[in-house]
Amino acid sequence: MNKVSNSNVKSKLYGMIVAAAILGGCASTPPPNDLVLVAEAAVSDAAAAGASELAPAELKTAQQKLADAKKARDEKDQKKAKLLAEQAIADAKLAEKQARSVKAEKAAAALQEDLRILREELNRK
Amino acid sequence: MKKRNLSLLLVSAALMAACGTPQPNTMLDEARTEYQRLQTSTQAATVAPLEFKAATDALNRAESAWKDKEDTEEVNQLAYLAKRSVSVAELSAKQKAAEQIIANASTERDRVRLEARTAEADRAKLQAQQAEQQTQQAQQQTSAAQQEAAILQQQAQTAQQQAEEAKAKMAEMEKQLQTLQAKKTERGTVVTLGDVVFDTGKATLRSGSRRTLEKLANALKQNPNSKIMIEGFTDSVGSDESNQSLSERRAEAVKNALVDLGVNDANVTTRGYGEGYPVANNKTAAGRQMNRRVEIIISNDQNEVAPRTEQNGSASE
Image (cartoon, rainbow over all chains, first blue to last red; front, top):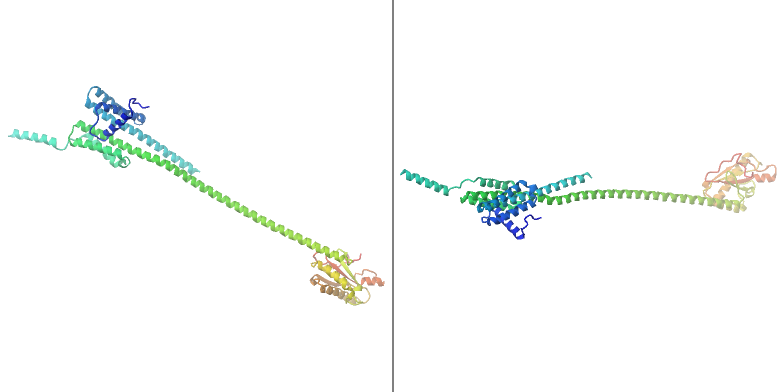
């Protein structure tokens, strides 16, 4: 079920802290390789939240950035890897949020429809 | 001299570039616009405060970097991350709004159900009340009908009792009249008083007749509602007028005697028939004595005794 097979609770927490720091405009961020791992986790979380169905464009963007970040890391371009990984993390978080938000809105719409039908039924009596 | 001025000018221009307003940055402009939209068009500040703060901080960081004239690449990166942060805040606001609806929907559904149940309960209660009223009305009607029936039954019983009492009285009277040799005819029961009860040729009653009259009076008082006709007769000796008069006075005398003994005079009628309706032959003394009589007729029912005619006249036939 958990796509990142080697991620345990500690690294998940680490990933969350890093992502929050990135989205919160925190100045100092971890080394590039750590960032790539965090980005991988973030993309996996987004997929788990249903982003492939509910936020496909946003997820694709994140996945692309992640791939580019890995490439830069492998090419020893530390600066580029860092920049791309940070972006991937932010994109993945956006994709995840989009998926959750759409889910909630769909559920709300369904409930409102149920309520409307219920009202109709009761008024018919 | 001019060369020095020109280089001075260049240096100052370079200095100006270094110390004055920073270069405009497109990414940062976009981030600013999006943040402004977040502030004015959404409820993110109130419903998603944490995400809103993160977006604010991210933009501020980008602004600082830009003001401090840091690397364009650095400013772009921070501006990009700020944009993403703003989007996340926007989506959080939407999510919270949806979650509010979800939470309310449950309460709302319960409320709608409760309303409907209450309305149903009220309807059921009203129906029950109406049914109760109808039952009560029906019961009242039944009760009234029962009361009526009871009254009618009582009336019937009373009527029956009265009829039985009347019958008993009649029977008692008949029984007592039998001791006076009463005879039943179609006009009623007839008791005949012979000539012997009167003084000769007069309408006065002899003292010896007292017991007979008492017996008769007692019998009549057993049935106070019966109607009585007293008819007087004479023999053919003497004039028609004097016989008529005598027969009438004799009938009256019997009536008065009975009334004195307690019989109700309203029920008693008298008549004289003179020489008429003889019951024996006037040529013999015995026959003439038989004709000199008073007949007391007691009606069979509550009605007046029927008048005497040729058909119903004789008591001794």
